[in-house]
Image 1 (spheres, one colour):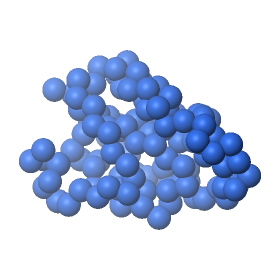
Image 2 (cartoon, rainbow, N blue to C red; image 1 turned 135 degrees about the vertical axis):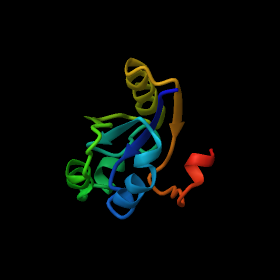
Image 3 (spheres, rainbow, N blue to C red; image 1 turned 180 degrees about the vertical axis):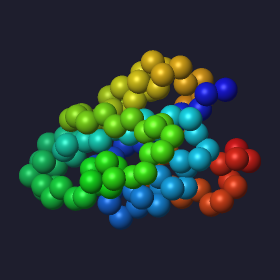
Length: 116
């Protein structure tokens, strides 16, 4: 069974590398949705308040993807639902049968994902 994970990324530099290391060997596809801006559906002023862009994209592009399983979709989404819906469609297009939905600040200790 081909497994994939979708993860949404916007200003996640503090956790991103550790998160990727914790899941990399347990899934076949990692669909990363990298947002160029914060969600505005819930807070119309979010673009004004959260202007800082961190090094998340640099971390993603520099992560050692030896098995070529990481796919980065860059864009702008107004809400989490539309971002996740696009991610699941991209995973379907890559023939993923089991889709996991993780947040970058969720950590998976050694062995936990293999038991799952």
